[in-house]
Image (tube, rainbow, N blue to C red):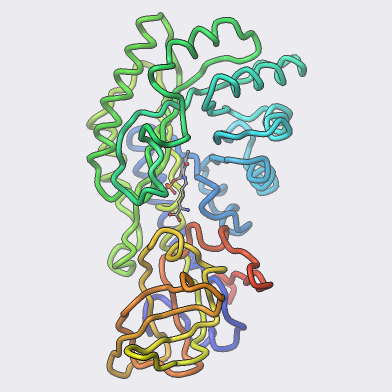
Length: 384
Ligand code: LLP
């Protein structure tokens, strides 16, 4: 058996499909919760990584809150039973109906990204006779050194409030009666495997706090966002990300002010390793100078390699024959529909089961129906 897979059971299921290892998700959640608790840190799971209802209900049962970026996500977590007081709502482009949904449900906090947004939240809350709790998402100008599509905290990015505008935002807040400043929010990027940028972020946050103190403003909440990476190359060696190292970095480099609560929004590190995309080899095809394995899964089921040049480990679950080198591609009519170039797989034949690993985060949720393909089903290790 390769990886943690019940291959015999897979043979009876229509491919492609997502497979979630429930025991691993449970272990990952336990580790995240235990390591955060050591420092009294609070976690809001970044729902954007995976909203599969079973996954959501396991996350909720572990006691985490939810970080949402749309009305749809807020609705999904409310349906999954997350308490509204554990929901934070971020995003540069919140539509009025989405803000109203958050207000009607009395969510914990709106992470605000601009002055115009602050004014709209103030107006909509005022109409309802409510005061909206807000945190300012500041762009801290820390380079996460990750893929440029998933870097969010540098000057050129659309996210967050420009630090030079912070005083102006604080002036604006003074004249708005229907919003209340409760926190500061940051998120510098995703799939960070180096702690360095988080250490830099801690220093910057301290400076922003000083700027607030100088105006006699104290906030109750600091939210460092998400971003902790996973080991895409060696998922079996590192199935559970090192949450101890992650949280200790903040513990060592950031001193919360008395009474202040510190929050995090991990997505990928919670669900990434527990999911795989399982597909079948349709054809093994000789190109002019290389061989292709053509799968029945494509970028419609996992877009990360096409969109970010992301590496995912690929395994042939049906073969133990000596390895050969292939480009592993999908059936979609685009050259970017390629899961990996020049990969070594056990000799592959038509019908072999192929696992694409570490697909639990930003896999199923980013699936599309391009080429009129059907959205695949998900299966779970304990109910297969
Ligand atoms: N908080 C905020 C404000 C975010 O924008 C994100 C991710 C997270 C938390 C969660 O980050 P994580 O812990 O998952 O790194 N589709 C891309 C990732 C996009 C991430 C967007 N924001 C991928 O497949 O790599």
